[in-house]
Image (cartoon, rainbow over all chains, first blue to last red; front, side, top):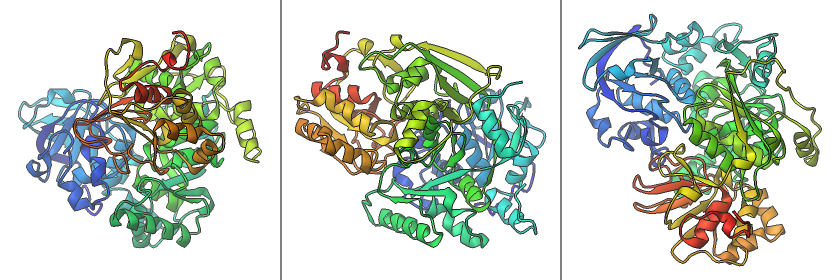
Amino acid sequence: MTDDVVSSDVLTGRVWKFGDNIDTDVIVPGKYLIRDLPEIAKHVMDGIRPGFAQECGPGDIIVGGSNFGTGSSREMAPRGLHAAGITAIVATSFARIFFRNCINVGLAPVECARAGEIEEGQRVSIDLAAGKVVNLDTGAELSAVALPDEIGEILQMGGMENYLAAKLARPSGVVS
Amino acid sequence: MGMTIAEKVIAQAAGRDVVHPSEVLWVDVDLAMMHDSSGPRRIWPVLDKLGVGVWDADRIVVVSDHYVPANDLLAANIQKTTREFAAEFGIDKFHDAQGISHTLMIEKGYARPGMLYVGADSHSCTAGATGCLAMGMGSTDMLGIVTTGRTWLRVPSTIRVEVTGELPFGVTAKDLILTIIGDRGMDAGLYQVLEFVGSAVEAMTMQERSVLTNMCAEIGAKAGVVPSDQTTIDHFAALGITVEAGPRSDDDAIYSDRWEYDGAAIEPVVARPNRHDDVIPISQLGEAKINRAYIGSCTGAKYEDLAMAASVLKGRTVDPGVLLQVAPASRAALRQAMEDGTAQTLMDAGAHILSTGCGACPGIGSGLLAAGEVSISTTNRNFRGRMGDPDSSVYLGSPFSVAAAAVAGHIIDARELLGVSV
């Protein structure tokens, strides 16, 4: 999925809402880790909301509470969500490895202290560069943390793989 | 202004004199580790696609531990890919079914004081017991590291965790760290480093220290570190490795918080199913029946953990309604347990000895739980369904507590069996 470049700074989509401490064992249960990505994508969130992968669609956005993505470093958690169509996760805070993994696979992690005010089924638009989430149903504007330039660049390029390809192609071959 | 251990390690790795929390910096990595699940099978195809090799084969450790032993052909292929990767890229620090990566990083003396170490697994923080800054990341971060030797970091603030006094007999590092996680919540250390100091920490062996740093993952922390001292130097000396003590935090270093505990007040605890921060003293738990007991993982199956369990099980037998399984954290742990009779004691009591490896802990290997089964485990996480069926339940406890519950058929204070008045 790293070929999908985040072409715009603004992502718009329908919201699926989850709670605090959503862990990677419920996002992608360990038994699926041996499978390939298309199969994993069919089972994301199986551990907490079976059938979610069939219900969600391209461009959808997840809203979570605190410590989203806690637990294992399994990159298949954000990769599986991304492959299932999710383009961004808005949460009050993220587990740090999950946050990094999101950026590396081209799935936007958006830290937003007031994420809890967004309800399931509403539509939101996210301006990544400005650090702003707009609830299109209520008109509420929620401030979010904009990514530092060094990291935003990786996400902009669709993830670490594309970033590395570009950096390694430079004559110097030096990252950053 | 003074700096913490974490700030000193990052400053050195970034080529800076001073760093401050929240800065985002690119750093040089001293040592990298990947395992069979996170490593070659994910990284190798991309290396080929990018047409690049690895930055420094001597600074990369590869361990097969998650799919060991291979239970089906998919797992067998993952193992084969891992072996071929190590051979292709000249990785000498390759360990095939020798033990769990985090245990080996310490046991083999790879992670050393003052290093900046990154492993492609959330429990890579375990190695912080040696006084290094050890962090877990994902596969694609590891891809970046193995190709360039560099990664980006947000400089973390540090929480100083001081444990004074000494832990009572029968009370372990596992009880201490679970107590801390229960008090503070599973996200209390988010983006930060926990630095463990105080007499109760200084008195701990390297293996017990590694339980504290291992479970820093369970409080959201970027890393856990125990300042290197004579115990650290002795650990390496026993391996024939001479190390100097690593950096220590300056007296005027700035901490984001200070957590203080009296070691003598810690008692045996368990985390109740589905939340590792739902921690309760066993004395207040009430009746909790179990039918499975598991001594395994990087957290709870090192030699000393096996010995703790054996001290409870000696001369006793496991309750007929309980299956006790033991998956040693490394071959060396099992060998030591065989040499001094610990393994004999476990088997005499009725324990089923499994292969070394991550086993049932990540829900991958042998020993999974069926719906309705209730286990007490020396592992680190009990998220819903982690060790098997979503309707299985896992209590987390110390090796003493797991062994005692296996004998009793329900969770008890192991000190009742150890002959200690509580």
